[in-house]
Amino acid sequence: MSEASAPHAAERRELTTVQRNAVAELLRVSPVADELGRRFARAGHELHLVGGSVRDALLGRLGDDLDFCTDAHPDQTLRIIKGWAESIWETGREFGTIGCQRDGLRLEVTTFRAEAYDQVSRNPVVEYGTNLTDDLRRRDFTVNAMAVSLPEHRFTDPHGGLDDLAAKIIRTPGTPAESFGDDPLRMLRAARFAAQLCFAVHPDVRTAMTSMAADLDRITAERIRDEFTKLLCGTDPITGLRLLVDTGLADRFLPELTGLKLTIDEHAQHKDVYEHTLTVVGNAVSYETDGCDFVLRMAALMHDVGKPATKAVGADGRVSFHHHEVVGARLTKARLKAMRYPKDVTSQVTKLVGLHLRFYGYGRGEWTDSAVRRYVTDAGDLVDRLHKLTRSDCTTRNRRKAAQLAADYDALEERITRIAAEEDLARVRPDLDGNAIMELLGIPPGPLVGRAWQHLKELRLERGPLDRDEAEAELLRWAHDQGLR
Image (cartoon, rainbow, N blue to C red; front, side):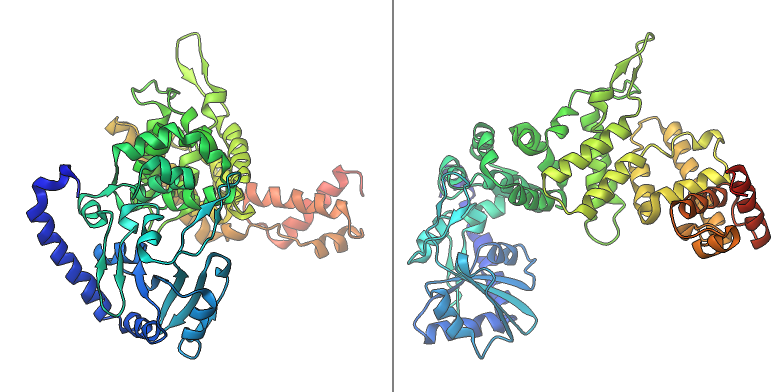
């Protein structure tokens, strides 16, 4: 117990009682955990609900994935659960973890650990421990270093995790330097938990994150990617992103974000592009309807990363960023590739960044039906996300301007709906397929068919659907112009 928390001892005791009862109640209505605990006890082993499962139970958000620790080794765990578990998997065996399923719950049982870390890669090298105390001491944060024994429901909290949970503080069981020295990824995890749980990072932890940020370079891109994805999909990603930038962690794997910080936008507003970007991310979150849309959030985060490289100051003193969406798309593709994101995610985010300025100018009445068709066709199955990204990008404080932009985009969406009712915009194709082109022109398969097909598609985008006679006439006209007839 720290001196700083002493004045709140009475409140803490009351909270402890309530929350301990909450854990017992949650376990009571989840008999699978107690049943598993009795099986381990009969075999002469301990079993404890541990880590994030205890934290989430205390927060009233325990899900269907439960984490346990035990003094039993993997072979012993397998013997205990065989014949009881509905299914078993051993993918985590090298880390001492055996997984199984029972009554709709996914259970992972891990042997007590006393981990060491490879001094080059900083990846964990598993060494089995012998007791719960050592296992909890090696965990990343105090709020993840609590346990409940099964089936007794004895609560163990040697590092004040319950106090920190009540205070909404991210703190390490030992010194932050020791914890981050063991595994530098924990620095990124601290920012992730700040985003997920809406907790504050303890000043000592923040100081260590700043001074040890360069140690993150020893972590593989895949591990960084996974933590960052969870951060960006958190309840409050803005807090996590600010923490990454302020501590210098972002410089190690996402320097484009820090690079936005002092780039003033083209409207010479008091906000810099960094602040604008965080606002856009927050706006994008508000448009989600079914959980985190990582592609949308990442596109919002990266949509202006091309501005630093394209910044120019005109003779009148106005700042511009011409073609920053093109440069930004290129930078986004390179960054996501470096972070080892899947090709489909990289492609989708890059495409949204490249298209995010396409809407501007619509309100001046310059768009023809052809332009609308091209807008929808170029966006493809990302058109709904592009709608959300474009709306999110409107962060002006000028109410009249904001209202006009919103009205313009409403009008565009209504126009898209109208044209889509008349034409299948999601599947724009030429009015003649490849077979018809070859038959009409008397040519074999090859590049020439592709050129003819592309010409007819351009006509389709420009003029809308053509009837068969019109399409054939246009194809013959094109063939004549190409010297084919």
